[in-house]
Amino acid sequence: MREILGRRRRLRLRRRTRPAQLDAVLTCATAWQWPVLPGVGLEAAGGRGDRGRGCACPDPECAVPGAHPFDPGLLAATTDERMVRWWWTNRPTAPIVLATGGRAPCALSLPAVAGARALAELDRMGTRLGPVVATPTRWSLLVSPYTLERLGELLHAQDRVPSSLRFHGEGGYLVLPPSEVGAGQVRWERAPAPVPGRGSNKGVPVPGPAAPWLPDVGAVLDALVEASNGAPGGGSRLAY
Image (spheres, rainbow, N blue to C red):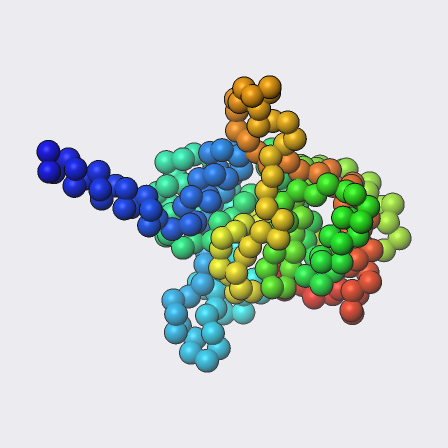
């Protein structure tokens, strides 16, 4: 009996102390059915002395330290709970990388200053936003999946699309909170919210994964282009 009680206490302690990454990535993969994989992450503390922590990948000039897939590669992204648990059990602080496109969300990212300006304008217009991911340098708005054809049509209608506005569609990826990358801590500027009315139906829970609500790309693109064009220097900074 003492042995059984001891095992139960140890199990409860592990659950209370397991890294936030594991809880977050299991929600993404199993509840929301978003394909994920671990990012490369950063070097161990002190790896570069005064230069700070660089990317753990072999490229000493990596432009997005810690914030990209490496081993495994992007094609390994999955929603399989056993695989996700294995990855983050072995690498508990690995960044959470979402493989965008297909059935998964897509995203648009822009410099942080322009992102704040775009969100303020979209709020003023009454546009409902989905999750917004933020680092100290860039903000990313998650949107419902789009095709390259649809995106091309929308961009063709724009007078000018700044190079600082980036698109994470089919074959792309985005780092999700709570992750740490070279640019700093990744956080939710706007936390994921469920689809309106999906949580219950006259008090009866609705079955199925409560995936976050996502806006259409066309609903936010104009504001993001305008905010990026109006940012200092044309919003040209490309750091992740």
